[in-house]
Length: 337
Image (cartoon, rainbow, N blue to C red; front, top):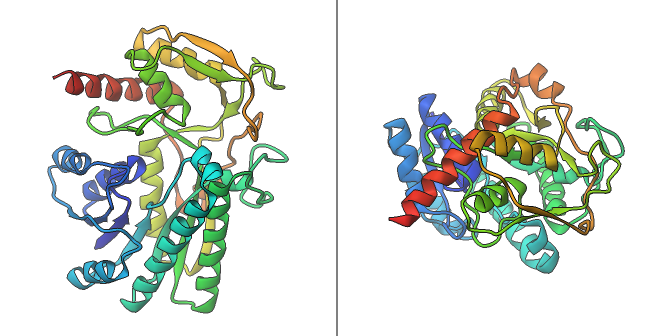
């Protein structure tokens, strides 16, 4: 089977490509490489000792996308491509709405033209906004607090309408919680451009001296230690969830949403402590004012994914931190050469 992976050179996409290749799939990647690097996919090939095909194509370019489908018999698509920085989405909402929605619409139109109707979509727990109760179920109210999250809601709605219009379509909407970690080899991992938006890459950059200290946004939340609590999931567990979702598409139609998380919540201070244990490094930190829109506590109820897909997160927080540190150490050594 040939799987098209949009945004396959990115953080989650590249780890998913590893698992797809290891599972025996043929992998075709479409990525415009604006926030990713071709060398990442070379590392994927080295890790797996298998080849994939990369097209440096933007999903806004329908003509080039058609050619990809003409060159390969695509069986299903995993759709990661899109803009994903919450802060940037607040500053540039029209850019996010136009890019994320148009790319998805273009992709679905090209898929339809080539009779490909199986799709796994990279959604996000940001669709829940500040949840009314935890753990968060897939039936919880949808109430994103930023344009990035709202693009995910809109795309989910578009895909539901597409599937409702034709029973040929089978679509999984995977709502990720907080991916961290890296491949055990240390050869691929999260490499944000500019100042990291997420906790773990910021911690690792402080650990190697790229950043002076970590800002902890608020220590007066109604949690055990006053810092925000999140559901951190190892990126490899997340990647494996996509393979399980692919399998399910063969025996289902319509759309289904699934939470991908561990079901456990960890505070910012707990993550810092776990990383210090994993790395042997002390992380300088300061408490900064709360950020607008941050929920005090968010973690998943992933029961549906376990029951329907046979998927469950297996890797714990310490392993996530060990793998993140191995990756950052590897990158720092490479950059020093």
